[in-house]
Image: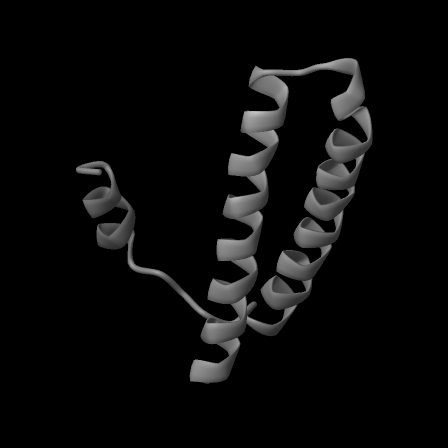
Length: 74
């Protein structure tokens, strides 16, 4: 079971890093940055597909509402 969560965590970390890098590219966009922007967008699409595959493996997991309530503090 832990492998499933480790796999999801890895994909989420990669996705967040790609979003961070995308933000940097967009915030200082130059026409010469278009290829890098396109690449990051493609990485995001692939990342979402990878996360969706993990979702299918974890469909039977329930998360207590308290977890989400505690996230509000962050």
